Image (tube, rainbow, N blue to C red):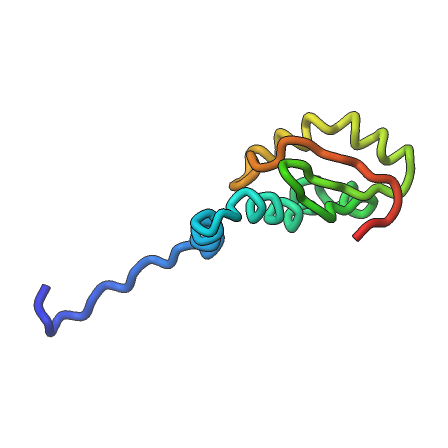
Length: 107
């Protein structure tokens, strides 16, 4: 390529990957990964479950999810393995090792 030829534009890279690398380099990679799953909760569980539950916290491998009552807590406990499988299929999903379901509004 000569100085007179225009350079090919570079293909854009997703910012999620870049931010994740920066956070990892600062020692916050796992925390960033977990919080990215919190942000994707509705996408993970779908609109019906998302109407009645909300991921509100990530701490040391555990995703904390608020549910309105004991019935919804029980329902999500029954679906725990499927939810974790969906999470683990996402970028950064392996940061989440467990779900902790909390009855009542949180965060």
